[in-house]
Length: 396
Image (cartoon, rainbow, N blue to C red; front, top):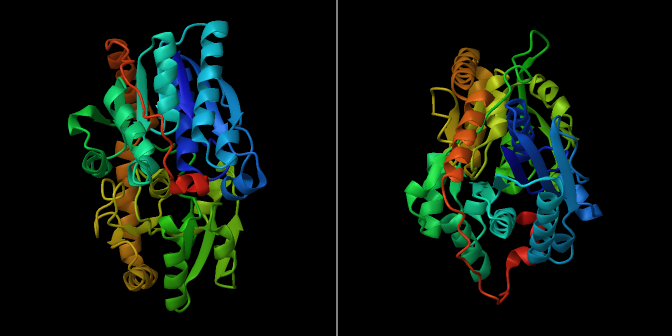
């Protein structure tokens, strides 16, 4: 099967969705599929500061085409970027052979680009709805709401990471729940495994996008309330400089860490803290589970599907800094609880979240899409109403 995969912000920094894409495409290539990826990236200084920046790295067995998101960089002109993605996709289709299926990661803007490309060359489309799609896109303006509805109504197959996130998207966008196929995140249990030695069980680790919406500022406040608590923060994002301002003997800020070095970061500490407000499905949590860490997170969309309070993690309500500090203190002072939670999480991730299983679910979606006629019967309003994400496109 010849697959066109369209990704957004595939940057060589800490991004669960970038890692997810690379691993998925490796699995598809190993299964014998001919895969081309078109991916956006930020090349401007501001984008590099937030995302790590730069074109996507090579993926073994995959043709990778990087497109700088010049429209996004020039005042949030997402439509300009959609046009460029579609143009490049059509050139690839004509020059290197017809695509059998188009799979877009994120509903907007790449999902809409995928639908238009599929319409141009008569192929079926698959769209993976990601966290930002459900939490923010469509709450910003009428045009982006309409775009998300078009994607959800006209894609041949809709994939989503968790049932709690599906329920949020259903409620916000009015999409029938049966439109979605649940395909969870996955992790490489060989790459992310408990270290044989050298782990500091009392060290806290935050690893991922450094963004207040991920709860990182709440975590800093909580650590300051727990005597003796020590924290390592790894990653880049819009709030990295705010986090750096808190650096101290107890709070070590690493900044950018590449994917190949991520296992060594998780191996440093015994407690992973992800006080996130919402996810589609958190791949960084899966990596921490596979690394044998005890986990503190939140009763959030996209988290409660893989973590359960007192069973394989400690969960608090998002934004409750006092409860977060109490959970940190509890794991620091109760080593048996820490070991029990870590062991339960490790067993679950090895049992449930393998890449071979998840890639198989996506291949099934491709085969179903091939049996569904391509749907080009959609349009969008021409008006471009004010949208907060045009002023701050990095938050979309």
